[in-house]
Structure formats: C-alpha cells, structure tokens
Amino acid sequence: MAHRHNFESEPMLLTLLHRTTFTYVGKAHDSFNEVRLRPVDDANQVCRGFELKIDPTTTIRDYVDFYGNTVHYFDVVTGHTSLMIEAVSEVETTPNAARPPIPVVPSTEEILGAERELKSEFLSDSHYVPLAVEVWKEAQDALAAGRTDIWSDTKAICKHVYTTFAYKPRSTGVATLATDAIKLRTGVCQDFAHVALGMCRCSGIAARYVSGYFVQANRKDDEEEASHAWIETFIPGFGWAPYDPTHDRPADERYVKIASGRDYADIRPVSGTYRGGKTRALKVDVRIRRAAEVASAPA
Amino acid sequence: MLSRVAHSLYWMSRYIERAENIARLLEVNLQFILDFRGYDDVHLREHWGSILASSGDEELFAKHYESANSQSVTEFFAFDLRNSNSILSCVFAARENARMIRDQISVEMWETVNELYLFLKSKNTEDVWAAGPYEFFQDIKRNSHLFQGLTDSTYSRSEGWEFIQFGKFVERANKTARILDVKYHILLPSTGDVGGALDTAQWQAVLRSASALEAYRRFYVRPWKAAEFLIFSDSFPRSIHFCVAQIDDFLRRILGETSLRPKSEAARASKRLLADLQSLTIDEVLKDGLHEFLVEIATSLEKISEEVVATTMFYLAESTQEEQQLQQQQ
Image 1 (cartoon, helix red, strand yellow):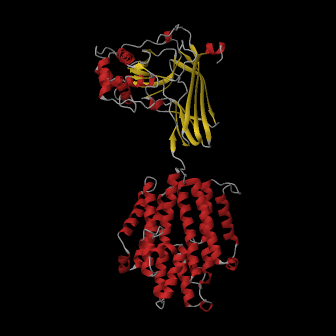
Image 2 (cartoon, helix red, strand yellow):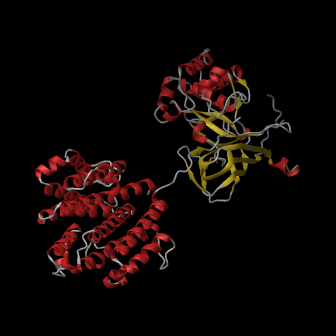
Image 3 (cartoon, each protein chain N blue to C red):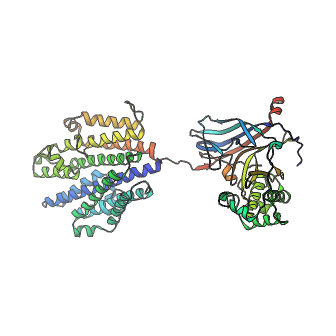
C-alpha cells in the first residue's frame, strides 16, 4: 500500500466525522451508552474542536477513564427506533519533522525489567490478547535475528505481522481474539494490532492498543472508511511510540489518536446496552479529510 | 440507592413486622381460649375461623387441614411453608432479603434475623405445645423488637432507612386493621353479651393483640373505646392513625414529594387516608360500618405500597438487556 504523501513542516489540519447509526426491530428503550470519540491532546496532536450529537436528543456527560481517555456517556430512556451518534472534530497534528526522534534504548533485561511493575497492565494478558504459547512463538519467529533495542524490536514484530498476515476485510469480526487471528493468519487492523500487542508483551515490551483514524491520501471515492487501530510501545526515558502494523510504518502526522488501552475492549468507540428489540442494522460512517480539501470540495 | 436494595430493605422490614404480628395474634388467642374453657367445639371453630378470615387465608387452610383447632391453626400460622404468611415463611423471606443486602445492613441486624430463622427451623408444633406456646411466641416477638431496636441504633438515617420504616409502618397499619376486624368477624357479641364478661375479655384480647392494653389503660378503664383507640390514637405507635402519619412522612421523602399538592397517586392517597383518620369520629365510622372502614384502609394501603414499590423499587424487566452492537476497526 503505497501512499503518495508530501511530508510538510506545517501542522496538518484534519476534520473528522464519525457517525454511528443503530436501527432496531421495533422500539429500543432504556439505552445506556458510552462513547470514546474525542481526539486526545498530546505532543503529537491538538484537538481544535469537538462536537457530539445524539439523536434522539439527550444530555451528554463525560469523564476521563483510567487510561486517560475522554468518555462521553448518555442515556435514552424513552422508546426509539434508531439511535444516531455523530462526532465531528477538528484536529491539528504535529508535522513529522517537528516530532522528537525515538531514542535507541537497548532491550536488555535490566531496562525492560525496571518497567515491569509500573506498566504491568500493558505487559499482561488482556481480553483480546491472551498471552498464549502461539503468540509467544510468533514473537520468537519475529525476533529470531536477535534483540537490539526496543524500537527496532517493535518494528521487527510489526513487520513480521505485516508480512505474514493477509489484510482481508470480513475475514474476522469485532470479537476475534489475537489467538484466533493467528490461526487464520488474516484479519483487519484490529487483529493486526492485537497480534502485535501480544508479541510485544511476550517479549517484555509494554505495548498498548490505540484507536483512531488516518487520512488515506489516495483514497478512491467509493472506498469505505472506518476507524483505524495501531499500537504504541513504551520506550523508557522517552514515552509511548506509535507504530502501525497494518501499514508497517510509524504512525505519523496523518494519524489521529482518539483513545488507548490494553486492547479493543478498553477503547470501544461506541458501546452500551438497551432493552427492547433486536438490532436490525449498524451503520458506521467515517470521513477523514484535510481541512483544505473540505473547504475546496464540500462532501 | 439501587432499586434492588430498596426492595430488599422494604420487604425485610415488612416480613419481620408481619411475623411479630402473627405471633402476637396467635399467642393472645391461645390465651383467650384458656380463659374460656367453657368454649365448645363450635365456638372454637368459630373463633379460629374468624382469625383465619381476618388474615384472608381461609381457603388455603381448608385445602390443607380438616378442622380449625388450636393445634392445626398454630401449625398453619407458625410453621407451614405452604402458607406464605406463616411465621416461618415470613422469617425465611425476611432472612433471604437480608442476606441479599448483607453488606448494606449492620452485622447485628443480620445475626438477629439469622438467629430467629435458625431458632424457628429447630422447632415444630409438638415441641411448642410441649414446652408451652407462650415462651415460643415471646421469643419471636423479642427477636422482632430486637431487630427493630438494632435497626434504630445501628442503621444510618439514609434513603435505606426510609424504605425500612415505610415497610414497617405499612405492615403495622395493615395488621392493626386486621386485628380489629377479627373482633368484627364472629366475635361480634349478641346484644345481650355487650358489656358482659365475654365482650370485655374479647376487647382485651384485641388490645393485647396489638400490644395496646397498657397504653389504652392510661386513657380508659373500660374497653368499649378500644376500636377508637386503635384507629385514632395519635400517640400510640401501633394505632392506624399513627402508622399512616409515619407512612405519609416516609413516602413523601421516598418519592421526593415537597409541594403541598402531591404529584404521585400514592402520596395523594396517603394524604387522603391521613385526612380521614384525622377528621372522622368513631361514631361516623361505626355508622357506616367498622368492617367496611377497615377494608377500605387495607385496600388503600395496598395501593399506596404497590405504587411505591413499582416506582422506586422494582423494575419490571419485560425484556432482557441487549448489548449495543460493536464496530470493528479496520
């Protein structure tokens, strides 16, 4: 997947739209939902604007979860046949050139061991990422050439996933575990990220799941867009460094981060419960544009 | 507070109060019969029949027992688990409710309910009759009082307290009404008996059934005013008026009714009931019929408590909870 992209030194301004529509068979009621859709503010990006709309209209409240993600929650108690959740945000990302280089930190037992207690949640089993023997074996294969430094190990692991797994939409589902994806050797970004997380963790590297979007410069008009996922590994003395195993490259200025956690379960963009009829359909519209593009050609 | 917890607190409290009232009713009537050794079988049947009628369990009793006598009625009201209003059933239900919310109540409250349950389970009708029923019923009442006293001195004055008190007073008002109704049911003396030894003893039994004899005697010597006292007294804590005043207070707190004109049907009904109890006289009540009046109170209390349960404690899960479908990241 080659993307034509000119790396610039100016910040990149992106507008994002993430619209989720549930339609129900009959009426749903007593619906309680949480969404993690607000882009984070950190060294790599600044959220310039965020608006969340719910239809039927209701009061929206928010809190910050254990991983530092902003969670908006709301309820719709009265009967409704559909529920629409629309998040529109504007984000400015730091150009690649302005980002600090990732330091070379040897992946020795002394250095990795020192982080073990502080980052234990990103080193142990999680729901989607069981640290099973097959995950460990994948990591052994990826790092067969020997360990060097944490960032190079991360890249080696992600490269292994990128080269030995086939990207195939609809071959897996939202509930697919890393171990299932290893059996199938196919998947989408969610599975790529889960597998890479498991391999990092088996190698003693603290790694977390990142949910977000990325701009596809050479996107075809009818191409479906969706939210994206990648990983971050912890580099002692530096912090979290992002890498995208689906495209085998570091997440750069084209990436917008909305949440992080141990795995998909911690960052579910939209989750909730309700009473009433079954869900007839779930429709997700995601649109990521450079602000300049939007201005010239309104969608 | 979780509605489930409120529900358990309410029923725990109601069932304990109910068990106590049944124990007292049985005890008093067993003693009463001892006082009237002249009672023949017909009288005995009538007497127990009236008690069964007052609790509304006549049919259920007839289904499982051949005749109503002291033994069979004691068995039915104390130990029979087929009777959901037997003392054992009530204590069992109170304990189940307490067990579900053990983390919400004091350990002393839990232990009292649990001990009462274990005590009841270790007894049966034969034991009770062999050892003397007086002691047995005394133990049940003492445990109920202990429980209510412990609740008073160990439970925080929070929302939960309101549910406990609401439950207790609804049950108590109901039982006082029923106890009075017993007197109406077959204990109604023939004209010649009015004011006689039997009539006097019966009224005393009614007063004792409501633990009201001493309180009553502070005001009156002769028993004819017993009905008036049990309905209208504003200081005796088991009179219907006193209970309804408490019900009205706790119900307004539970439902958050602050305005003069309540919004909920339950608060309006309790306000109406309280107004009746504050304004009617015993002559007016007797003119329209004591029994009808008591039935009306019981019905009204039932409606009030049902609405409070429906709006604050119990969620009718007519459908199961569904997970919102998740979207895969691609």
